[in-house]
Image (cartoon, rainbow, N blue to C red; front, side, top):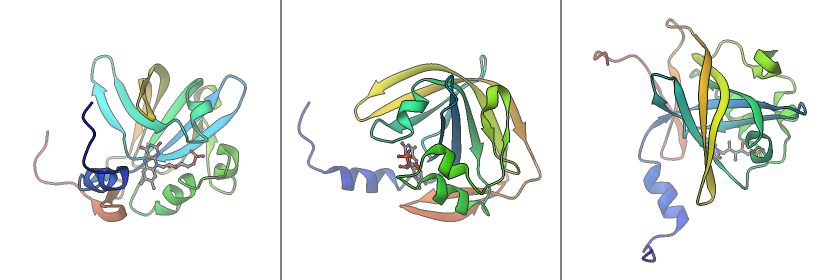
Length: 172
Ligand SMILES: Cc1cc2nc3c(=O)[nH]c(=O)nc-3n(C[C@H](O)[C@H](O)[C@H](O)COP(=O)(O)O)c2cc1C
């Protein structure tokens, strides 16, 4: 591969021009270990069957749990849940530490579910594909929850939590 004329900081800055939503991902492994992290690399992949993906840095302390997770839940955060996004993005805390002091309940197979988010997609790992310094985690979704009347979603733009993403006028 040709050596790029930019470094990873510039690459991150360039990718940051793409506004995203913000999700809180939780996962549980067969041995009961839990992971919790903030993720904006979430996207839907397939409608039938229902599949989504997100990417995780292999350097993340959540990676060992996510790579063997029994069950994964992706929560689309509301604009007033920036505190959860910041907490779940704190390095040096275990998944259990990150969940300490915030409201959650045990979902299917014990995966932690957060209440009152815009939407939840939960399921089992389909594939974990290594690509560079991240893995792509594909999830087969078998459980969804959503609140069409919820507050707008939290968004992230150019390295900052940004103005909320609210409903527009065009339906897709
Ligand atoms: C808005 C936002 C989006 C993020 N998206 C991702 C992501 O898609 N993949 C990832 O690996 N880390 C992402 N991070 C960083 C992780 O949340 C953070 O490194 C991680 O939670 C640190 O804890 P850990 O090492 O215990 O996983 C994001 C952070 C923020 C604030």
